[in-house]
Amino acid sequence: MAHDHTNHSKTHHAEMHHGHVDHGSSSGHDKHAGHSPEIFRRRFFVCLVLTLPVLYFSPSFQQWFGYQAIQFPGSELVSPLLSVVIYGYGGWVFLRGAWIELQGKIGMMTLVALAITVAFVYSLAVSFGLEGEPFYWELATLVTIMLLGHWIEMASVQGASRALEHLANLVPATAHRFRAGKIEEVSVENLQPSDTILVRPGEQIPIDGEVVEGTSSVNEAFLTGESRPVIKQVGDEAVGGSVNGEGALTLKIIRTGEQTTLSQIMRLSRRGTVIAQPISGSSGSTGLLADLDCDRSRRTDLCRLAIGRPIIDLCD
Image (tube, rainbow, N blue to C red; front, side, top):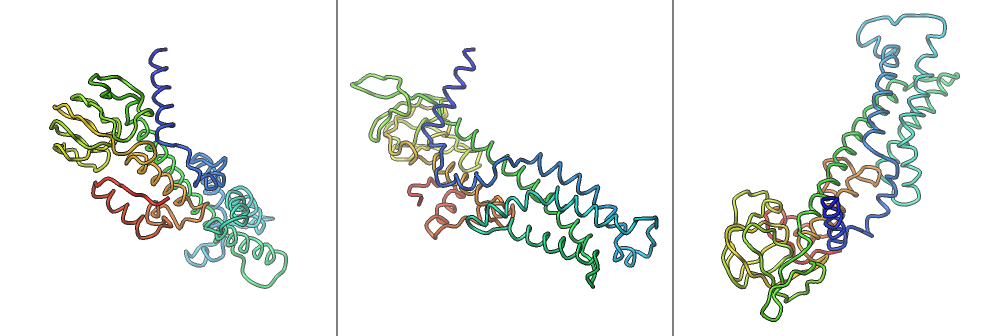
């Protein structure tokens, strides 16, 4: 029970201190209400099974691969009937996403919904007598491939969300603050700029600060990916969430709350995650950070983050 209480307190601290509620991304999450990797995975496998007969009975496939599909009463209805199921079941997530996008900013869901709807309606019209060639196999494969892509996308997004949760738990909930010549243990939320804190050997640094006394090696792997500790001396900046090494450090607080480096990383990652999801208008999973709609100063912040330098000023 004590362990559960500790975890709850730490999670609550992380949510309060690092501002987990990102008001700027709420609309993006609303578009994803009820979506998960499992939804896309289930629809993908169902549509994949239904797509195989459509491909088999496709005249184009028969011509390309030189075979004759089996014939039986009603065989000409196999592709139309299966395509109705594929369009309705597999394409529903895209149709629903397009409806949401039409009320805001048009994105990929609208494009996919438009493509499959045009192919579906035209193919049905051909089946009912309109002159032309149906697009049943194109419709089926497009829906199936897009479901696969969105399944992978949502799994990636879910992994990024878990990474954000881990980031939130990096910073300890309390710090050792100097006050009137004594050391007192206080909540990190109560720290103010210019406060002085003590970081003992082996402890995590609770908040961004400047070293005013002591020398130690600090592990900043969570920020830079470099496992080799960095020597911190008087005048150097130490980032909250990094791990102190063998020496004690006295830090003067320079940033608190949402201004800390860790909070800015989390906010930047969360915004990138929302924009990268196709339902909110992204061009694909490779656009996690590249598709950020940001100005030059924000791209500069990304470059500084990539090389391990703390972000000082991040545009909202």
